[in-house]
Length: 125
Image (cartoon, rainbow, N blue to C red):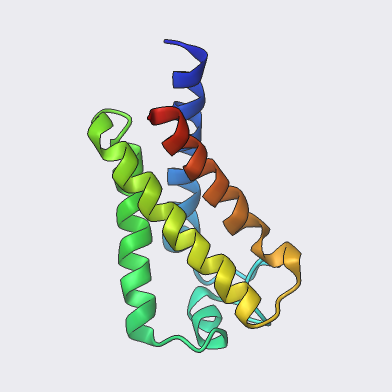
């Protein structure tokens, strides 16, 4: 395996596990990265003015795409779909932080993970 393949593999694992951790393991845990004064993911969506239905759609998309990104380790054809999809969703997260005028640092994780996904896309082409 070449260095580029190791980088892609590491990014897939970091992103996939991190997103699953945030959405399935720690959705009710307070974090300094949450939008506004929210302490849970659902509160964060409320702060952004987004509905429970929208939360459910984003939940399914993010967890589903994170699982597909991990599956792309074995099934390479899933790589671009999952990385591009996650990059778009993370871009939306950044826009929501800007919408409510959060301090810049709160959008850093979304920005970092968006860049990591775009790196996967670039290195996979």
